[in-house]
Image (cartoon, rainbow, N blue to C red; front, side):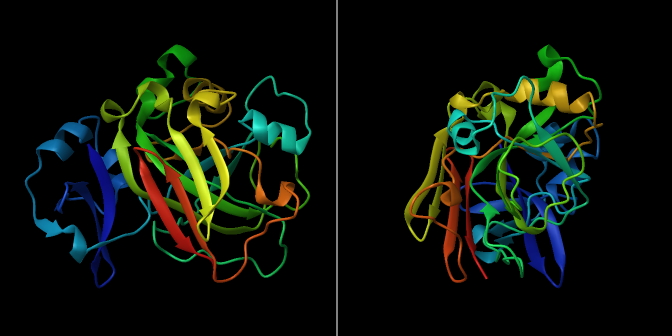
Length: 275
């Protein structure tokens, strides 16, 4: 099942079940509110026969409007590790961004006023479905609602290394999330085997596959939940495939007017203009 959060006009939004040509509106402001509404959210979302809208009549806002936590795991691909030059981590390095406001799948991403050394790139996003605290790895996938696409653009600020656990205080240009969440029953186990790519003005700048993650989704949830209580609707960005634009020669950076396309095959595509 594919779910999204759509704009309805006059500032209204709604979670929606997405079909080929139309969507069925659900009685929640976004997919995060739907997931938090009770353990039977998936059954209710599949059975709901609410108002129908043509997909051409709506636009996608961020899948989760106000996640309590956005967890960023980095590095989590061998190519990215080679680029940073750091040692192979024994556990996932992560940081947490609290109470951010992601943008939608076709919204603009605004570059920060200072700093041109940016982290950016398509990532497999994990949407937390149940509260998770000190969860064992063998039970961790039971806390996943589904998978989405995340592109977090932030000033690297010289931090070409593994993230250490803590609050992420890097200046953010923007985090795009969506356009849809695919539930776990319609995706490969643990989101494995999914092609990830990021294009800038049509040129492939990053490419990878989630089978190459250094730490899989279950391991990430187990480790993160030992330090942070994950809540329904929280997001986990599982890592950027390397190399990055700033790590290649000649140097590649994002510039105003460029189009950034982030894709996880079978999950979704973000298409954001840089302003």
